[in-house]
Image (cartoon, rainbow, N blue to C red; front, side, top):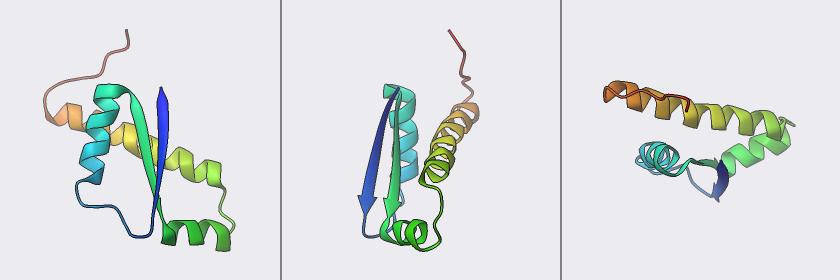
Length: 78
């Protein structure tokens, strides 16, 4: 599994989550994003970066699984 991180000044575009779900399902690539406000919160509130990454990764994989469920498909372990 591959992993990528985007950092931006502003929040994500409205199509970001849908695109990330498709990329994960098609290419087994997890993409997460941090905006400036999230980075400031990580630093100012001393939030654990690894816990935050884990939360974002779980969100991507869970959303992708739900997207498959809505389309009538399921994930199977090979």
